[in-house]
Amino acid sequence: MRRLALTILTLAACNDRDGQGSGFSTSITTAPQSTSTSSSSSGEASSSSTSSAGTSEGSTAAASTGSTTASGVPDFGMTPDGGDGPPPGCKGKVDFLFTISGSWTMAPKQARLKASFPGFIDTLESEFADFDYHILSANTAPFWGYPSCAGCQDTCAELPEFPCGVAPQPCDLVRGAGMTYPIGKDASNKRCQLDSGLRYITAGQPDLEDAFTCIASMGTNGSDLVAQVTVAALAEELNEAPGACNEGFLRDDALLVVVAIQDTYDDQDSEGTPKDWRDALVEAKGGDADAVVLLVISTDVDDPEGLCGYHPQGVEHELRTWTELMQPNALFGSICAPGYGDYFATIATMIKAQCDVFVPQ
Image 1: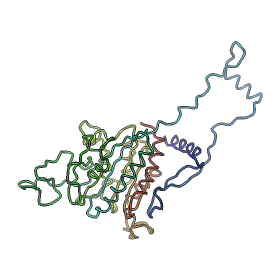
Image 2 (image 1 turned 120 degrees about the horizontal axis):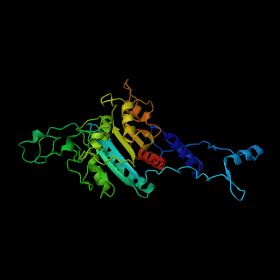
Image 3 (image 1 turned 90 degrees about the vertical axis):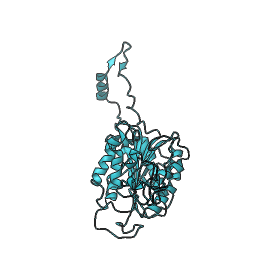
Image 4 (image 1 turned 45 degrees about the vertical axis):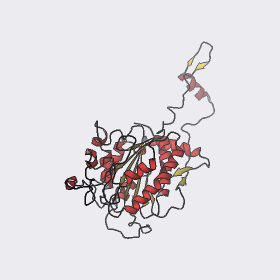
């Protein structure tokens, strides 16, 4: 699969307008200089076969592999058709999974994420004639205690709680399930109106920006664990069983794009290791690593030139390691950047490139 993808990318690079292919950086920790980030790489395409002048030996060999018709003209069989042709591509089908920390420090970062979203979608709509999206924001919050609302008159005295008289749906309390009622300080604190009737947004959603703003306003009374929640959101029990919280979100013929945003190290809080998280993404796409694009926006204090300042923690930055394990289809961005639009512009370019070589499993 990867050999096929690399071959197609090489051929595409040869046919590019400037004769060069696009490459991608796996880490951005300084302020991007433009609205998109790309780099050029070059390579040589070599023919898989060579031709030589006809010799008597070649003529003899050719004649021996064919048959002779009644007219005396050698019949060499059917002309090769050049193989199966290019891969079908994702044809504009993209499944977006957002895992957003609800930590108490995340309010300005969530605002930057939501501000970057409209331009990201506009770019993808311009790239795909038939942009068919699923957008799910996974529940990263712990399980808030609903019983404390008992007996209140209008609204509960303390957040985060569901308003009095609002019974949570079963999936509202499942970590990794699509979030449709974010609760708590700085959260939406209302049921998001999704036209699909599902726990994720689908193509054709009216007021897409408003719908995304609602499901992405996770608030600041939640938790981190974005890697663990990503794995949970893609797990079979939340996607495959009839009536599962995220049923129908993952499509076999769609590219998977994961955006994880957390302003701290994972600090070994999420279950598993960066390799486990990488394997979960690949497994979700039938073992095809080229069917996944990952964007992690996190602190870059482990980088001497990082935007957050250099304050190494003395432990592995597991979210960065996760990104590195997913390269070349991954990008690490600094959460301290003044805006995330350039990271999303780079990811949009990655999505287009991977969609072109995607082979549904």
